[in-house]
Image (tube, rainbow, N blue to C red; front, side, top):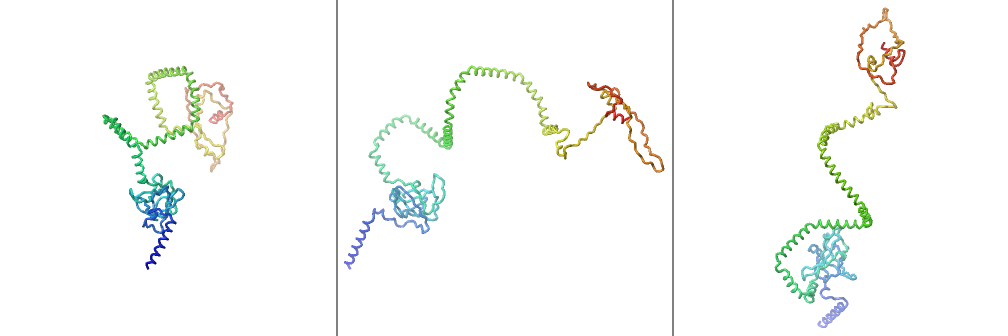
Length: 404
């Protein structure tokens, strides 16, 4: 029994030696941490790239907002880039442009992967299974060893011994000027506070200045032409200096004369404007009636709707003329024409009455028509012929003959 056990132990030790010598053994860091966040079979896997994972091991925690949501499943090396595969619970929703940082729980605590939402750009998409967080969106924290080594460099090889000299000179410079230094610091605090309150305006002003400089750069050729032509223009102005001075002096005298004229005619101008006020007021009251009446002149004597009433190529015009022929001689200065031949009147055929006889119209009493005397006579127009002859048979004679 004892020999058998010793034989088995030797075999196990030999096998363990072979295994250990055939694999890379890095101490305790080669063993994964026990446990880890239970992510389940439906968890999604994301690959994170780092330049250095420090002493991060498998089964390390993956956190979001300091809450554990997964664990590290694998760590591998791709060239000079470390690739860390993490498994995250399916109920954790992160944007596709999420960031990853390598942090530790305390000063000497364990390392973990922190998945964070972006703060310098809007979140977009959703992080899904198989996605990659590249080096551009990953960062690692500073190790305590790095801090201590930097501090040892300052304490041992730095200029720490010069701090005493700096402190002594600073005290000598500020001694006796405490109130002035305090006032300067107070004003500096007010100044910095004012700048902080107006940082938006300052940024906007800088942006505007940037746009202005860009436009000036685009107009560089124009500025070159202007700088080339301005000296010649200045030379022309220099040559015309005497004339310009005389023009300005003339304008000065004209201003004095205009001032005197306006001052002297002020009352008359005010009176004219006041007299013009009723005319303008009546024109304003006329309003739309005045344009309408002026518009009627273009179609006089027809209304504006005359085109709608014409069904063919002509329009009928009915005129009523009221003429008093008895006063025509007095109004025109011409004698009334006496027709030489009486105008025959049409004979009417009237049927006889029953029982014989011809009906007769009742006699109309003769009423003398008064002819006004002393009526004003119109002057005789030149070129008008003399008295009308009695044997002239024109329209006027025809009308007068019909009256007789």
